[in-house]
Amino acid sequence: MEISRRGFLALSSAIGASLLLGNNAEAVEGKYATLIDLTKCDGCKDEPIPRCVKACREYNKDRFPEPKKPIQPYWPRKTYEDWSDKKNKIDTLTPYNWIFVQKLNVDGQEINIPRRCMHCDNPPCVRECPFGALTKQPEGNSVINDKICFGGAKCRDVCPWHIPQRQAGVGIYLQILPKYAGGGVMYKCDLCKDKIRKGEEPACVTACRDRLKENAVFSFGERKAIYELAYRKAQEEGLYIYGDKQNGGTSTLYISKIPFEAIEKVLKAKKEKFQMPVKVENKIESKFNPIGKLVLASGFISMAAAFIGALSSRKTKKEDETNEK
Figure 1 (cartoon, one colour):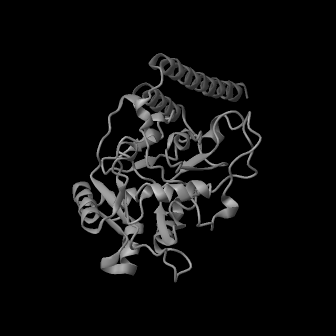
Figure 2 (figure 1 turned 90 degrees about the vertical axis):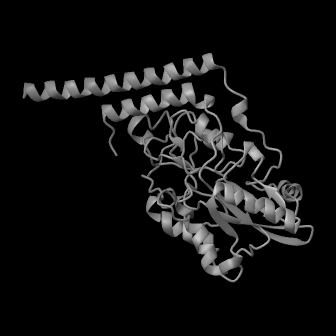
Figure 3 (figure 1 turned 120 degrees about the horizontal axis):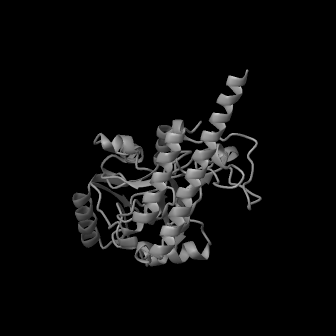
């Protein structure tokens, strides 16, 4: 992939806009939501791969990263994140696996939890990405643009669930400052963005219903209807809800007969990488100093200008050399 001066200018504009305006955005409820009923999930125990995981991988396989090797670490780091030799790993989130089923034993009760992006109403990952690579869509999903993601992992740092995962050796950083800036590209569930734009269901939802029919774990639809379904089932069946309040609200709700405080206690005790904190405050409310952000934005824009100038100088030099021949 090569980047033109116009492309880089567009990138720098996105960076500036994200830095200056991102944190001032308000929470926006999306069009759709998902309900995940943990009382029904058995982790597809009789199958080698849970249906939701298999469907996600199949639908998104053409978008999986193909790193350029050998991968070089970038200063000042001496390591990099490379999952390319673990493409078939399905028991965690990776750049090649955007949903997995977390298996737990809580007070003698087996529980299976499909884990993927929560798609927050006011997503910190979107507001804090310094490159403008993340956007919140009208449908309610947050999406990473892999064409302008530098893999800085700010999105993962501010995500309460640490969902996005990084793959080195791919992305725009290879064309700009591969030794000094960027770490690859971040990947996560985007709720099958192309499908839901057409009014279709995400692949994981369809696959689950194909297996369990009316007892499907996943329910997907208009946000209001999904929220009403979750509250009604919680009241009628004595269940607990997760996702409606956490991080200011999300487009992904869970219901469970086991309190989520008990679930989180087990996850903490096991030191699981992906936990389910019950008390999650939205980090957008703790904003950066606006003057500091202005300075940072100016720095990025200056870097963009310098790079564009370098490209222009190199082009001029090549033209001069050509004319001399």
